[in-house]
Length: 321
Image 1 (cartoon, rainbow, N blue to C red):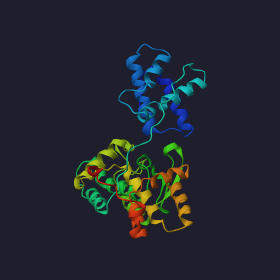
Image 2: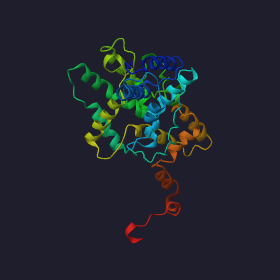
Image 3: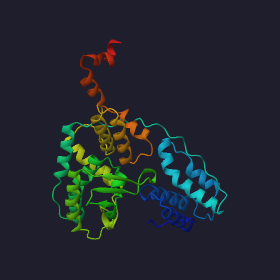
Image 4: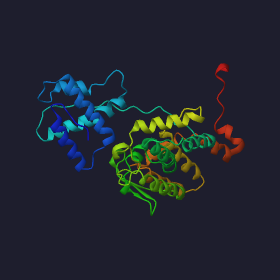
């Protein structure tokens, strides 16, 4: 746990203990933003002894460099912290309402088979190094990204996956720390389970008493930067298109959905199971992926043949309009 140094340090520690006890603490997101708020208080209000409205308003105000979504992410835990203090009579300060979230405009990348082969070849071709961190990277990277690809698991869920939450006998992952704190279970594909077992045996030689299934230095979990940096480096090694780690989760959803298009009523049952496996609270969250399915046009063309152009006419060239 980070050390807090502002006049709020003791109250922050109590708040974190409370959140952890109630199983509502997201260490990867909340701690860093609470730490930034603590540094803000220490630097800008070094002589403060109580949390004033000025301090709160200054922190919660949307910055010129932020989107509504990034602002909400930054201030959410502080709003929760202030509500915690208010209910206990510690302060009378109120918080601003977070800005309304904006719809995401990013369209996930549609992988080709060749691109995926290139990416996993890059993962498997990491040079053998000598330092402990380098050896761990070579062992971990191929399995970590294959788990994302084969299970649709969120990167946060994979990073924070504890050893005791991985049942290698039955091939079940117990996802305790997820988006919205919704616990759910994931059944591993047989090929993924085989790889996970081999990885577990190899990593135990380096970290025999590790807490996290994919351990980082000092027996902690990897951070988001580690995931993004490694994906970007390995993806760009053989591919020229733009893709992100999140696209592996999107790909998992659409590949499953596209396989069920001719299954009739069974389609909805499978969609429900997929929704639960991906940790969605409501089915609409899973259906959202289908609205972005690039492969749907190919399926429609295959099913309708000549009538496809009638259903989806070609767009005229911009110069001829």
